[in-house]
Length: 457
Ligand code: PEP
Ligand code: CO
Image (cartoon, rainbow, N blue to C red; front, side, top):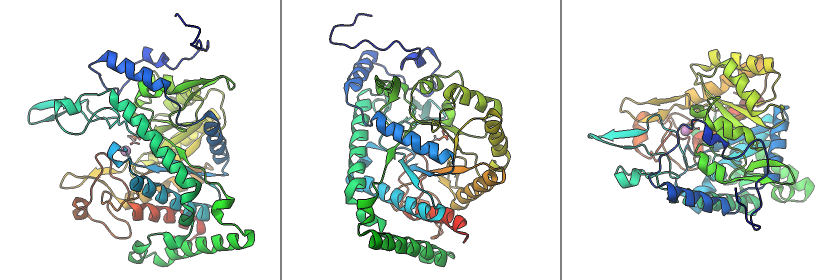
């Protein structure tokens, strides 16, 4: 390849960000105008990165701590972010619920919590079918705002390369604003008098919930009075971004070689994950992920076998690097009892270092009688409870949770203290993809996790 004096030659590494192109890449959109796509990818790869390698390495060290049981990972956000929701209000609300949940968890688990948003880049979705048919017309499925548009017309559903740039810009704006809030504007959020706790009165566990909130308040007051500083001045709150690394050209464009570390980094996010539908050993996603130095996660569902998991760990983390690999299991309340123990054994048998996290959302999706996609609070809680118990019984450590949530007052999941029913789903169902926990349901779940550790519920 010809390189001008101005262009730095690519390093001669065994792995290269485009190597995945020799493999079968599932869940990728088809672009009609290949030249336009190439131009966009070239423009994307010239833009500055959204995150830096030292932040990525800091997160990896924190995940390594969590693997040793010294920290706990809280990861949450929308199933799919939408471009329209890139507003100050929506971002602030999402951050608020994540920070408040993390405080509840810190209190209950008595360890530092790693806060990771499923945001600032969560714009591409895997779909079960490539096309959608309505009244005899078949069009490409909606694959997230990074790829195409939701309206059911041929032009809206055509994959548009410009959206890759729009998504990248919004990811940068989102993380920029989230960081600014975390760095200063959110000081008050540490104090429960700013929390929306109306739902607590609707729960039989009201006394327990109030005790948790009061204790957090007391601890903060105590801390601030003896230190003479507000908690915000004293402890810098770290906040990290994550998304499913699904659209491989987008991920490739953001993959940079960091000379002084002699490694490749995906600098579009701190913590990308491989979704359950794209974890094939010989597939393009695994090929791409093996070469980046970021901490990565893999979603693990009922179809995962012990052999498959052992091979994945071998390919994705051959040197057993601490902090590198998180396994997010998502079996559903019905399957977890049967599916999780063999995989814990498989990890142990391989002598592999992983962080286990539980996603109690994706195995518990169901349709109501009216055909609306929902998830029931009790099933979500049951899967979580079972996950904590199984890990404990087997001498393993459940060191994280992964939620689909929003800071808004939506009605997408049923149950929780207010006892939302199927009939409530019509009221404020905004998700275009999976149903999310609302503010109250999310905070209540954090309280249930904290409560079981504190010995209450
Ligand atoms: C998701 O996290 O939105 C998702 C599609 O999950 P999974 O890959 O676990 O099905
Ligand atoms: Co989802």
